[in-house]
Length: 77
Length: 246
Ligand SMILES: NC(=O)c1ccc[n+]([C@@H]2O[C@H](COP(=O)([O-])OP(=O)(O)OC[C@H]3O[C@@H](n4cnc5c(N)ncnc54)[C@H](O)[C@@H]3O)[C@@H](O)[C@H]2O)c1
Figure 1: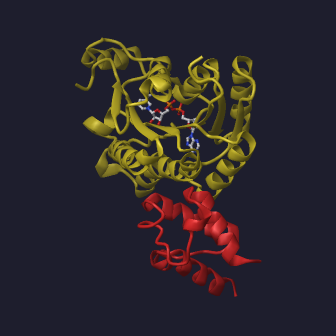
Figure 2 (figure 1 turned 120 degrees about the horizontal axis):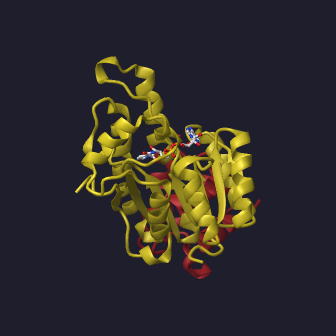
């Protein structure tokens, strides 16, 4: 599975942003306009799509697109 | 039709006030889904509701069972592709003076009334957030505002529901989800049918409108709060009590 592509697709879908805004260092809140509920929804969507559990402490650190992709790749290995 | 094509889930909807709300919603065009404990009473209620509006359904569900509630909301959403209204109505009483109240009676009432309301709200919020629209109605009680000797557990659960309603309203307001509490006073149901005329008269004395309410009175308020007419009302507790609380 192409984790990077899937994660980007989820972000575009959930946050309603343009694909080319979803760069690796884009911050969900500052750059992609997410609010706190959006970030919770994103995490829940990752959990659902990849069939994993993400702890709150882990979720807090996933502030950018790159960090989320890196974390999910590691988790899925 | 004030609720045309809306999907409304009503807990404890097989009888009493919950059934009355289901009936009112169905007659205004809503597809109602009732959750209750007993298959027989669900089937009977659904059969009656289907005469008002096709598509009424029911599921066996215990609101205290988080996993079961998760699964059922998933099924409901899969079937209807939307959940517009949730009415948290399931409730029980286990009255006793505090000195004599058993721990399990405290736990049971808090569990069904308060935790049950939380469970269903939490599970439905996922779908309402996605839709960016939804209405949550929590059936509290005037006892949750006034307190009552012999009902410490019930009063605490209903006061808790009022506070939970405000948190729900604040947390989900940005997603266009409204949450309001309804506080009925003395309402004539199967529960109160056992009371003697003497007791009923005594209650009536303290009610400015001088009579008990009906499930219909409660259902009418729910209809208003669930409809678009109440689009700018959230986080409120509204009494339907003949003026008992003011
Ligand atoms: N009747 C009154 O005077 C009055 C006054 C104020 C508030 N209320 C509130 O209105 C609501 C309905 O009351 P009612 O008088 O119709 O009661 P009722 O006992 O006639 O109906 C309650 C329904 O909830 C169901 N239920 C109970 N526990 C459940 C559970 N764990 N999961 C799912 N369903 C469950 C029951 O099976 C029943 O069908 C309650 O929350 C009650 O506290 C009633």
